[in-house]
Image (cartoon, rainbow, N blue to C red):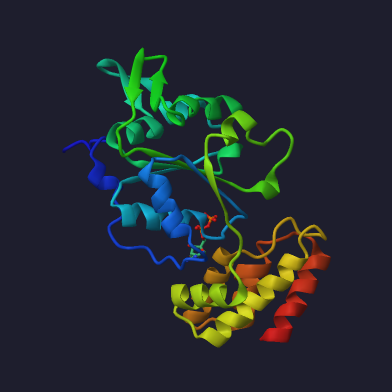
Amino acid sequence: MSEINALDPSQYMIKDEPFYRPVSDEIELFESGYASRMPIMLKGPTGCGKSRFVEYMAHKLGKPLITVACNEDMTASDLVGRYLIDINGTKWQDGPLTVAARIGAICYLDEVVEARQDTTVVIHPLTDHRRVLPLDKKGELVEAHPDFQLVISYNPGYQSMMKDLKQSTKQRFGGFKFDYPEEAVEADIVAKEAGIDQATAEKLVQIAQRSRNLKGHGLDEGISTRLLVYAAQLINKGVDPKKACTMALITPLTDDDDILDTLLTTVDTFF
Ligand code: ADP
């Protein structure tokens, strides 16, 4: 059995062009940023198209993409690598950031503020003129491949004093502010992505907009584009629109019965 070689870039290539509907001139701007390998941060609420945008750009630029979903248990070793023990002794295993730096991939750290602060510090030498990644435990200094680029995302809505990026980290990135697209664009995305008609997609978007008005008034976040696509996919499969909305848009959003009722009433006015 042949072992998968972690350093083979072909496995990280995005084969088919992802559907991405631009909202503004973000594609051109990202390309200009990539030309100087500028580290990029994508800010915005969950499910508004940040990851899809990175996938689209990796495909367009013809570069491998390595995505890491960051979480609060994540340590620097999870990104950089560690020694593993097997029957033959100890063996170093590169983490995803190291692999990306070696092969010249775009490394996308999704929800980077979730990770512990020591994790964000390891990206510093990679995101200035040095473009190096020190593997302290291994005693190796990896020089980033000329094609390597770091992209991070974070949701300023979840931000607290404890969980914010330090200025010394923030000021290493060019930034894009993402939000849910304007009504017509979002309806277009939902219709195309799930294969439903425009009129139904528009109703779904209007329900989402009502929920977004409740942000800060009982809801932490409104209904995301991602959830709208879920609802639309159920409708496409023949599920009754009210049931589809309840399942995909309303139930996952909150545990507060009053808000649930309000949102269900909104669904009733559209379907
Ligand atoms: P996040 O901002 O959390 O990374 P995603 O990129 O995963 O969100 O977006 C969630 C879903 O919303 C995508 O899978 C896609 O279906 C849809 N989507 C959002 N924005 C766009 C867009 N501009 N073009 C195409 N699809 C989009």
